Length: 222
Image (cartoon, rainbow, N blue to C red; front, top):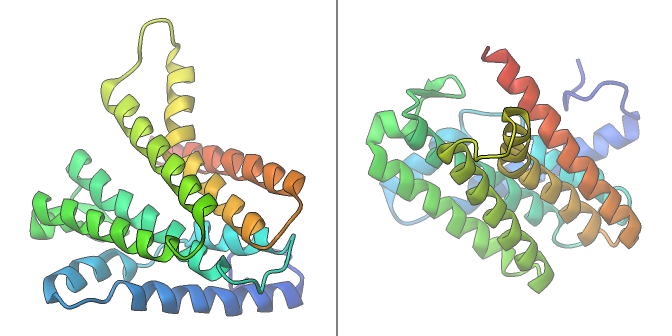
């Protein structure tokens, strides 16, 4: 069974990615620590519940197209995972979901207000890491956050006149899921110093992976 869940990886690449994913996990867990016990408890809730860690892994894979040892790659991978986790807290409030990743959802356990504020806290922690990665990284995250919000609004609002149900659905999943996965790939390529054309191709690839991932996930719920 592949350690990263990716079959047929070159053994040396798998070893390198696995080591870097351990660094991501360590930083993810240490960075959410703070002075307030309840905030620490609620923030740890979904981190410790596990998850695929698809976004940080994609950041690390994309970094292989440049220098994967450069500063900011591990940090940006954690930014992407923190952003993803924050959106899960907010999504569960909006969906009134009782479970997330096989455990009781934060909103079900602590109430909507605490769940929303925990998501906000994780966004803040992501921003702290992001501040050291430069203005281009900050702009990229801001644009991604904008798309995440627009996707959620469009999903909540429903289909608009003149737009088919399929087009509406694809627009929503592109913004809600594709945008952050695209950004995960872009961070890795950009911060590793990959060629601009490679950065753009990997960004488009990440978006398509995100859309396909969400479609597959939605089909499992049918």
